[in-house]
Each structure stands twice: as C-alpha cells, then as structure tokens.
Image (tube, rainbow over the protein chains, first blue to last red):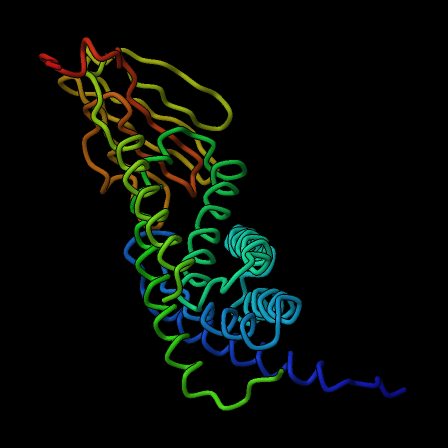
Length: 170
Length: 121
C-alpha cells in the first residue's frame, strides 16, 4: 500500500525537518535557568506563518515538538508537557494575531507574541501541574524578560531570512 | 517593523514592568517555616534551632533551622540545587528539591506594616 502524498505534505515535512534540526542543535546549549532557551526553532514557525499561512505553521510547530521530543528522548516527560503547552499557546496567539486587520504584524511582532505566549503557556502548566506554589511567580519576570529578548532576536533573524527568500506564493 | 509590531513591543514592555512590580516587591520578616514532603506538611517556628529530616520521593532531605533562618543541608538528589539555594531568611523565600518533592517555604507577617520601616506619600 502506498500512501499518496501531496505537495503540501512535502512542504510541511521539509519545514518541520528544518525546525527539528534547529530544536535539537539548540538543546545542546546550556541554559542559565530552567525554562530559558533561545527558541530559534520558532524562527521557522514564524517564517512558515508568513509565507504559507497559519495551518502550515501549526503542522510544522507541532511536528517539531513531537519529533524533537522523540529524538531527544523526552517524549511524555514533564519537559514535553511544557514544550507542547508552550507551542499550543503560541500557535493560538499567532492564530488570533493573523486576524488583525490592516497591515498586520511583521516577523518581529509575530516572534514577540509567539515567544511570550510560549513562555506564559509553559508557566501556566508548570504552575498548575508541577509546582503549584506561589513562589514560582518569582521566576516569572526573568522568564518573560528572556522571552521578550529572545523574541526580538528570533524576529530579527526571521526578518532577515524573509528578505533573502525568493519563494513567496501568492 | 510595522505599526502593529511596535504596539506589540510597547505592550510587552509595559506588561514586563507590571510583572516585576507585582512579583518582585520585597517581603516581611520571617516567623515560621513550612516544609512539604511526601504529601505531608509541617509548620515549624524559626526561633528554635534544630535539624529536620523529611522523607521525599527519592529519599531523605535534611533541613536545618538556625538563628531564624532555614536551609537544605542534605538531599538525595543529583543536582543539589536545593542546597545551593542557601539560607532562606525572608517571608516568601522558598527552596525546593524538585526530584525529591520537598518544598521549604518561609512564612510570616507580610503586611506593609512589617515590610517597610516607613512609607511616605
């Protein structure tokens, strides 16, 4: 039996593979605090969002979380729960953001929103499931600061990449 | 950057300032320590120096109370992050041994009357 694949399947697979590679390479970097990471795989999500639309970005992001966790060995661990909740939160916010009328957001805005939504979603799950102690809120300001800073970095990278990309479907 | 991008950045910065003000404002003097381990919680006064041994998911954790402060001195975890947290002295200070499931938290009177020596408007 041969599964029929469409062109969109291939496109999603390519983009997801790119995001997964970045995700795994970045997992080798040490982090100063649990939960702070550059999140450069989100660059792919934002570029996918701007070039191919929200649904493709959802596929790419969720495939990245799933396959990345399987390859790293953290599938269904608390890390995976946090990663998945962050991804779902950022995708919801991005979905709402695409509905903004007018010129809308550019890569910088989407990256900022995605990074902060990701961090907030992760924090909510960490607080609700793992450490339901009010003291966790002491971590929230530095986490959100990191999210904002890395969101700016990701946005800059995404913007630069989009400038040099030649493929832009109508 | 589009106008919406700038608005998003501005709103993010504003939210960040509010977060710091809400979460990082100081705390009052310490009266007692709450130790949660293995589903059981005990509240001890900080004026009596002693060492407390609790049982967690991995094994034992030893908490020392000395001169009105508390800290982890030993724990059955790998990283010993809980021990490196050091002395807990102010209300709200908390250390946790997450692998062992032990949380140590300082509580006390946290009203503005005890937080600040004087407040002027």
